[in-house]
Length: 246
Image (cartoon, rainbow, N blue to C red; front, side):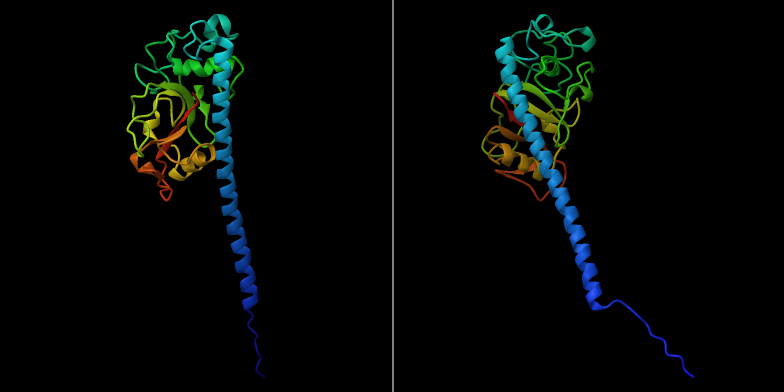
């Protein structure tokens, strides 16, 4: 007698169901990644607005700029040696070195470490911003971690430095800026913190979406932007930003 064997396999319906399930899983993962990116952008926008509010409040409360305030030791509780907090020079400029925003860890105009570095301590010890390790030395730990990546610090631009690329002018307008950096020794021009798409999302959320105009300016590598547009198809980390708060 011949024994008949029956071979079984997946039917087309079963294969279709499996493909649908895989598609749903992939779609869910991509959607989750998109939600995470959007959440980081929203959180960073909130950070920048908090910096803006804190800076304005500090000016009103202490009649001087954080970091530059010459009477910080006497007016701000906790501004003492153990917190590496010191007075600024009181000359009306919140500056790093002798030019525009640069390395937030050095400044020949402030007694200890630099006015851009001291500005974060002054505002934190006055309970106006969070995320600052007030007893940290001049290192990345002394800066505010950005939700979108890198770190944030505050400093003044005198209107004679080219930090952003494209669209109309070679210079960054003068004023007070919150700047993004990837470490304590880098200024915004070094970029390489965000992708063009991430920076563009933040720009559209908080400003006009154009890299070289408005309050949020793109900085970093020239390939971050193309004229008035971000190179959003480029997935490399080429960008940083400056946000004008005054």
